Image (cartoon, rainbow, N blue to C red; front, side):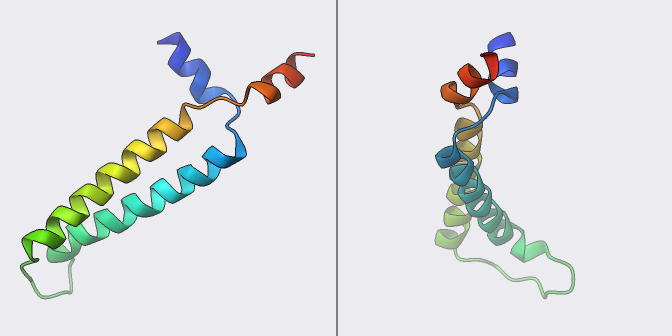
Length: 83
């Protein structure tokens, strides 16, 4: 558990920061698709099963990409900080 906390509080490499942003965007798009039928002000619609599945997959991919990217550590930044 200490290792996970250390990784979450350590600096993240630039590539993975961009991947976090991409994962959040994909996850948000998936959530928007999933929440479309229950959004207030929009008449209730039934989404095609393929679109529902796409929303689920997008939400999962976004969450996993964000979590994995956040756990990466920039070793160079840590070494420079400890000098």
